Length: 572
Image 1 (tube, rainbow, N blue to C red):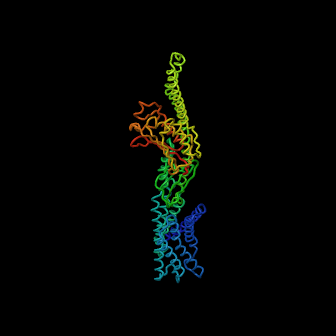
Image 2 (cartoon, rainbow, N blue to C red):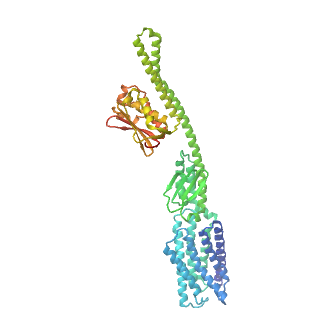
């Protein structure tokens, strides 16, 4: 029986040597691939452990001479360093408090000095003196505390990860506790051929295999751990394949699955210009995100600090997802361009149709009147008195002027609808420009216009646009309001404001909402004043073509229209 137990112990010892040597090789390979501090500490930890269980087997149990005694002390020192290096690996992702770091470092340094300061190390079967018992207790406390901290940190953090990352972290946490149990068991067993030693070797083997599974899990285990993330990826792909009409809609559909794949705190999709298309969660200010650039889009993910090391599988899924997002956004962009082209074509057709309708409808009245007056003069002119002929000629002149104005307004509308109005700001003298505009628009009513341009000298605007707007507003004020008409200009925050006021009855409240629509006329005045109802629509369209606007303000008496244009202004 004892021979069978001893043989099993020897076999497990040899197996453990192979396992921990393989661990050192795997850890070294990960460091060579990653070259980051965490991988370096893990490599040193497992190289240390491999030396203990392989080279350490060659150190005689009974030391003869200084060299063998020193080798024994180095073996013990490596046992002291292993949990410290494993601790440094675990805290590389989430730094501990300064107090804990200082306490662990001090305890390890003290134990290391103590190891080489021991008078001697009792050999197997010897009775331990009290000072060695105290050292062993300190050694086991050191191992237990550090292994527990490592296990708890990895296990708890693994709960917030997804898929493979969670499985790997929890496997490493389990292995750290298992190895601590094996070390404590080794220290408490005096008979190296007992069943207890066999159990210790078995626990060490299980711990070593768990470390291997945590560092380099096989494909089957990765597939098992990855099942949840795979479902999330499939869900994300289905969402991407569903037709979206906007980039924001397409990106927002896939972000919840993106966050779930890696257990991230937040994620964003950026376009090729670096602008945020959609976001999920609240990005933490203290953490640098992971950015994956793909053709047509970039995926930015605020993962946990453990994800880059443990979540390589999930990060590969994110690379796939980022490429699919880029393809989807390109598809949506092409769809948007096609839709914009279709809308533009439809708008062009509507503009043409509207222009024809407007022309046919609005030109009919003056053309009919002109035709009638011309026929009267041609066929009945010899029967009319001189006074009657003058009246017909005056009416003909008025209708011709009305026709010319209407044609000009219709042309303005067609140009504005087709977005072919060119705005060319230049430096002008505002006072002179408005004086000339008001004189032309007011005609014989020029004396009823009050100009207040104090404080504004030269401005940089398009004079043609300003002339069109103010002409329409002044004409509108005389047609629907009452004199005096006031034109006031001022500079405010780098913008030019020109207000046109009158003392009329104002705009009927029920018409305010549609005041700037075509063929809307000013309430009570529409039954007694002729007009097309196009002036305000044209004025606002010109203002907006100049990146400005036109608004109506109700006064206690009369109306006030304010045009606001971007302009570089200078005071007088």
